[in-house]
Image (cartoon, rainbow, N blue to C red):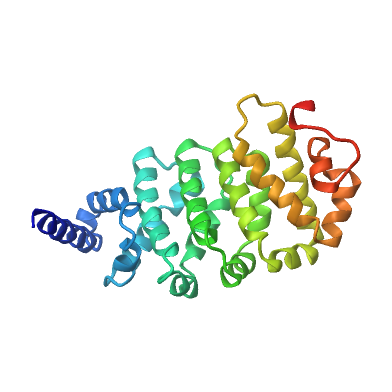
Length: 269
């Protein structure tokens, strides 16, 4: 009985915080508390989506931060606040019942441009990781609709290539995961086949990542696992396979990927 009462009180508190999102003076605490609970409450995305004014409030929070993000003047306090809002968007994007209407609304179009921001301050980088988290949530159970939307609505593969080449280990892990999930669908291979410049940029970025991992004693094996999965999938595209056969398959992986007679390992670089 006590457990039922506690759950009822928790729900009341969550609904109260959601209501407070629509009030600017109360929004900060509401964002923080809801973000802390979003990963523990699977139904959070549904509740947020169907709550009047909530999505508009989250978008207001995001768009009002654009100037600070693009100028690099974003503070840690504002970065945390923005990431809380993005994490709530992620709970909507990642829920199977709200994902389709979320895509139809094109709300993610308010987030993807942040990935193109050149500013590299820590608060801004923190926000970029949060946006990548939304994309990662979308491709966790990838559908052709999701992948097609990402390919058509943003220069997502070019962005992934940039983050693989220049990002931190965490950024590389997230983007390698996103890429491996996207490549599960033929629509991504078809897109790359029709965009050879993007295909070359992506394969070269993967090559550089493997090269970095081969000399890093603290390399995260999960990054390599995802990259190997990507390489194997790319061998199914004629142009990508041509590039892989002509110098863009790392020596460390050549036997595993291309079936070479010259076996090498990641530690032989």
